[in-house]
Length: 326
Image 1 (cartoon, one colour):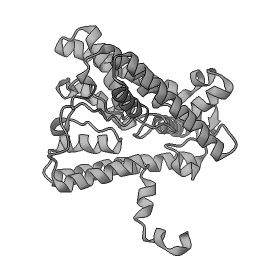
Image 2: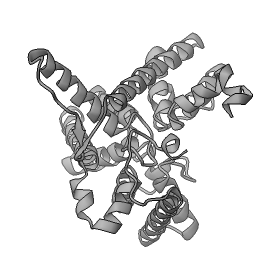
Image 3: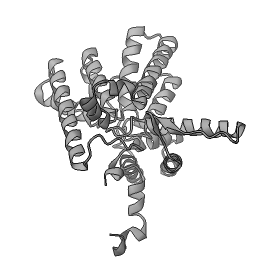
Image 4: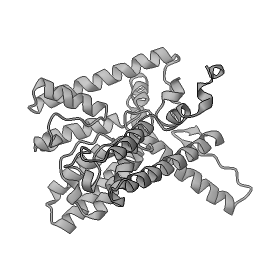
């Protein structure tokens, strides 16, 4: 059960029993939610509004009581606070348990979290430069909006501070990439997960080097841990199924009359558990006018993405329901 509920290929268990690990993770969750609530109240929100945004931020759910989401406040301070908590919620919660036991150096040495922060930082700089050059934005405003949207969409939270549907195509492409990748394994974020992307890249590099040096024995390592062939093939299988489902949802949505690029955006963002998409279903739009069949497809896509695909596929197998399986 512990392995089945893990969001991504992570074996990081910092306490010996599952029950104790569950308690530790619950404590981390409560502490983060409380801190986010207090921080939002310090920014001028009422208690209920602050609690709503804190719960939505730490859970990377993205629900806001205002139709315009975080753009309602038009407050750089609130955006920086929420962006900070969205990013720490995108990290492996087991990492925080380890940091509590062994010190903050665990966070600094975590390869996946550093990679995630690096992706967000690189995306922020590229989008800020694109907004400043293509649309004449002031650098401080371009950086502020780019960072918030990068943190929001990469964490699959989906808070909106700016209508990115009006941004240049290059910036939109970066946002789509962030939605596709998502956060870290073991976090509340959705998407493919950073650790899977890392392992895929390292596996490809490994195979290329083995073609060049057939007798060379190499190992794929991350965070000082060797990953077995079974884990690597599991990551490759997950990536293949993830991409194929994105394509399937796109085809079904186009069949129901949705423009192809809007359908592709919806498929990626719902599989990534993010929410806002592009075009007809962009930052300032909703899914309310979507045809009924497409809504059913989107519901299935959201379930698949949130539950890591294979548990849902198992439910669709007739053999799963045979009594002897239980």
